Image: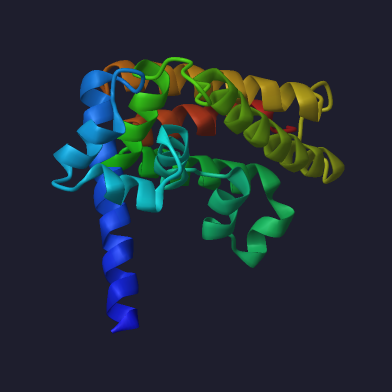
Length: 204
């Protein structure tokens, strides 16, 4: 019985997060109340407070379902042969991230964060975006440093600059695609551009 109750609680929590995605996307985060989310999910406001302390807590949980730490993306595609090929590891990890982004949930939540979320209470979308960017910058710098140590990175390109160049490419692609995701596939176009960028960074 306890096992069933735990499963039901988990299902309720997921249903509330699904409802939050839909309402946030329609109304924006600041203009959405927990009562509206509960009603959209066919539940009471008490059910929301059972699972989440407040709207900021719910918002963070929604983001948590689509977080893509760079190291996690690397580990999903990691093979022993990649240990000595950090530029290829970067390429595969980014391709993995692009493929995730094209899943509806990932696209919806990132659209909410970038286009439908204002600074509100404990919710600061710019701080959240900066946190994700800094996390990616640190991981990319580590892998480019490894490439430099293995003499695979161009001699006139420092790991720090290589990481910034890649972040600039990724940021431009991401925002361009998010504005109109039907115009091109980020998994296809993005992967091609990243591969070209990495090739230009590679030591001859």
